[in-house]
Length: 291
Ligand SMILES: C[S@@+](CC[C@H](N)C(=O)[O-])C[C@H]1O[C@@H](n2cnc3c(N)ncnc32)[C@H](O)[C@@H]1O
Image 1: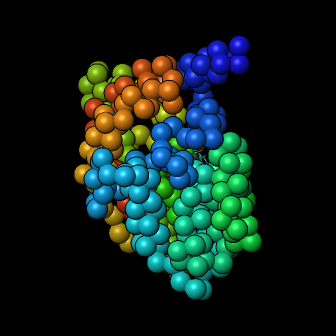
Image 2: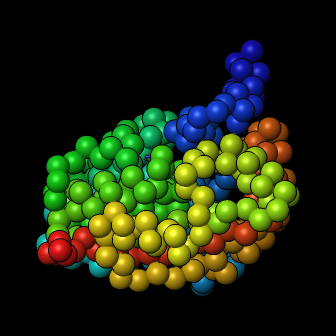
């Protein structure tokens, strides 16, 4: 009965009119959406610059490479007292920031209660409870005071936020002047033609993406600047993410079957055909607010 209830939770979520990304990730459970070989669960497509599909622990390593890329561009220093990871999954990036970059305090923020609870076990296992914390909270209402945060990182999560633009305003509010936002994100441009429109509609419902977050990269950057952030770097990582992850999915399709849900699989079937971009952005809260 419980299994049937779980199976039917998916169509209920997909057909609902409102977005609920937290529920989506709660339904994937403690192991996340992808089969992995041991380590922490993976919840992103990975950065495949130096990793090939088919190598040992390929997806986990590519996922860690993505975290390292975003962390490196954040430019952490010993002076950083508070770093946030927004849409933090199981806290793997927050743990990496503390372990690899010696940060004093990293707080991961996530709307998925299941991921937050599971991630807390990983933090305890790494003996990092004094430096890493996970909060069940939303990206658009960050429970932090104005100008209290040194750096924010976010990995493949902002496309879910209701809305991404509100998150930019929150980031601009909580960052200290000169504070850095380093992030990667999926960017879905508006659809062209009926097929893309239908496909996007299904993808938005399967993946829980608000309609307000559908715009192309130039508009993305314009909204970020409109929220009061100064753009420092942008690049497309499409070629180092999507084609490799697609190959990984094709190679692991049989292993994925027990992890996935038939309704989700049907609704997200057009994923690799939609003209997404995958952007890396580094932005700063200006030191002096311009007139
Ligand atoms: C694709 S996963 C990426 C997770 C993590 N950054 C990683 O790369 O492992 C997206 C994450 O964003 C979280 N999320 C979605 N909507 C959110 C919101 N409004 N506020 C905070 N987190 C959110 C999800 O629960 C999930 O953990």
